[in-house]
Length: 261
Image (cartoon, rainbow, N blue to C red; front, side):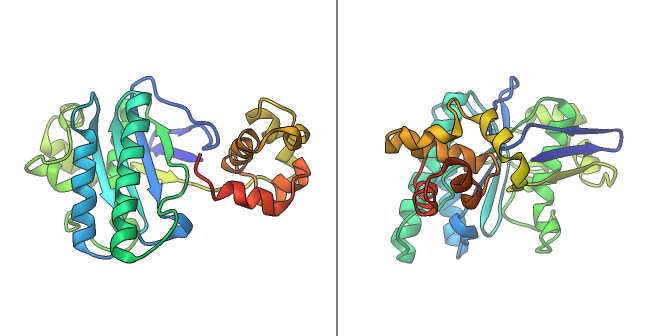
């Protein structure tokens, strides 16, 4: 679950199990290496990813508001329509995975099968998300946000290359307002991913995200069954819990988790 907080409000938004898109068209996207695998071994890898990222946004009605490359994950703040977002993420992840496997000799999936998206509904959430993304290297103990090369912070205070920051800077009254935002200790933003469901809540959660009874998954063909197993896993249920709830063997559940949605 994601939680945005400012000094005067706390807004708890939707759990990660249900893909919800913001009416504003702005989404905070997180993509992770499978099994927390490191995605970037060198600056060359990072530049290659940024080139692919730029290409993915060209020629469509979508824009990048902020970005940050970390070791095993990437943050993107995107303004787009749902169809464009899915296409952009598919293109970006597929092409970088092909590059990564070619240069490292890795085989198999590079990214987790499902990216996380958090709808941005208000101006305060937009500003909090921009600030959080640029503070990621600070939170990780890597570098000061204004010394870190691999985020869009420098585009907010200098030349734009990848982002369209006009809306954010207009809200803030320019670069000076952005600098004030980054120094505002009263505005915090916490993100919690992968929180698991207690056993006693499993059936309730399953029924809230499935269109069939959990016990009926065994009767479905593999494609439909596996898609719904992944839905349960994304809703916060572990492989053990899914097997217990559906009566499907844990090995079958695990195989479904390894497939892309």
